[in-house]
Image (tube, helix red, strand yellow):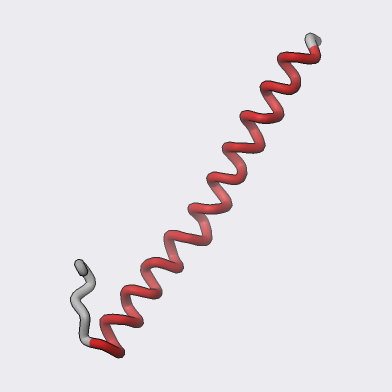
Length: 47
């Protein structure tokens, strides 16, 4: 195969994998933080 095509495929796959890992950890962290603020400080979840 063409080396350029392989490099593009690797870069695309890596960026997609990193985005997936970021969302996997950040989304639950934000939800937990909002619930914590709701319980401790009585701040609404929508703020």
